[in-house]
Image 1 (tube, helix red, strand yellow):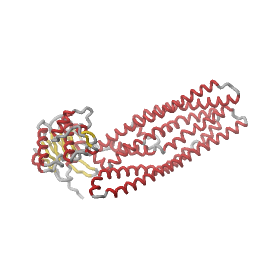
Image 2 (cartoon, one colour):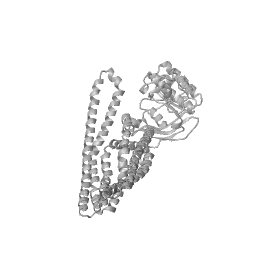
Image 3 (cartoon, helix red, strand yellow):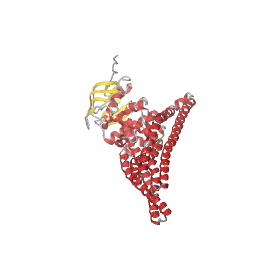
Image 4 (cartoon, one colour):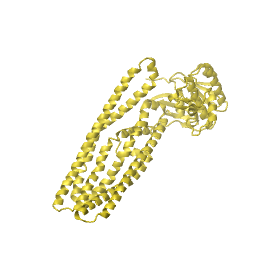
Length: 529
């Protein structure tokens, strides 16, 4: 990311507000620095010359307190801006992942996405708390302080103007040298997160086959590489900080020698000389701090780059199938074509799913059944038309997708004001007689596979009733159910259809096919060389 990437301002309103507030605080802080230097120089010169210094001392004390207040205000504003921007970007990343769909998310890797939106964006604290305030002070304070030096002493101003660009030159050279190291560290963090997630997800299988200890070596090796990379970044940070401090200190020393010689020769007054000596380090300080603090913000900068890639991918996603809203009636697909990646999996499908009937979408694996559902939900690039869209659908997929928390919270997921009676009714309709207050672990642990699947079905039924939707879509709803439970579920789906709704079931189970009012069979597309 650039020192101040325009994409950050475009995607995060909190960043724009902070820039305005930070600029105002930085300007006020610069004026206070000038007042502090002038008053301190006046006090010292007055004491040497025998002038009264009571009034300048009182003003100096007030200026010191004001400077402390401004520093605190800038730090508080930057901390708040970091929290707001992280929240905004996380919300946009979540919306972008929904827009791009589960296929895209699977290709990216859930561990990588979680690292970007979690640990990665947390690193923006350093960017906003330390780096960006110094960048603002560099843009605002440095020109004003150089003008103040020009006002008091042209020679010093010329020395500063000549030596000041040396720091950005060193910053660019150091940045080019460390960019690869920082990107490698971020890549290793993503690799570590992916390896750890894979280990946790497959731990039960590894335990069964007695292979869990072999994975410890893999995690240890990745952790060691990440540790080594982190130490490399820290080493570069310390060396670059030393180089920037050396460049700034030598420049200030050159000014001090010049002032000292001219004071002895009487070419400059004591007050002006002290003022210039106090202002010169302040002119170099923001630029030196920008270089030093850039490394503290490096992880946040790298994560922000990945966040912008996700948001840009969502913005550039192919248009979904055109949809016409219908409150009730048949689901009509006309010329629906769906792509998964670069592959066309459904080509020009024309089909009608009648209201008041249970229609099963069948076909061999790879025929595009789930792709049709993904297109209806807006999760897969598609062309053609459908008479209902994602907003009109209550859906349950092949994976229950349960979260840690109560069964009731999982059923009413996304409802800001859950209806407890409707939750119980949805569970009963799904054929699940469990306590809605039952607490589940991560991933829905605590329930059997069939129970988890029926909780997902209850969630779809809850949404259907709560929003009075015309379409219920279930993807392989009876895969983990026994024959008796499956037959009872089909009967309940018939009752839902009898209310005048469209019930679309993706299934290959013989009993579901036999009980359906209509079966639409898809065939895999022929692959031509």
